[in-house]
Image (cartoon, rainbow, N blue to C red):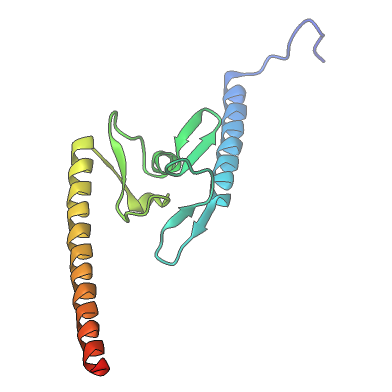
Length: 146
């Protein structure tokens, strides 16, 4: 029995085992809390249901930031200094690590510029089809009125 003025002496191996057990417990709790904030969509995206401020945001202990960055760090690995995490699926609230990739800011901007150009082309084509259809309907209505 130890005396009140003399602490229990624990071997370094035992202390390491206790710290590791505690770290595993905290890690499990964090992953469970993270999974509770996800809705699994049919297209394989993991929709973040937690806090959203411009994008998905998460705060766990020491980490406060974007949920997709947290997901990437926990499931894929560290994000290189100065890199952005890109959503390959283009869904801003997705935290599925297979849909995320680390890109340099210049590559990330280039990718988004190309995507915006594709969207512009799509919307212009859709607008022209709608405009053509409305002109056709207008002409048909004029013929019916006469």
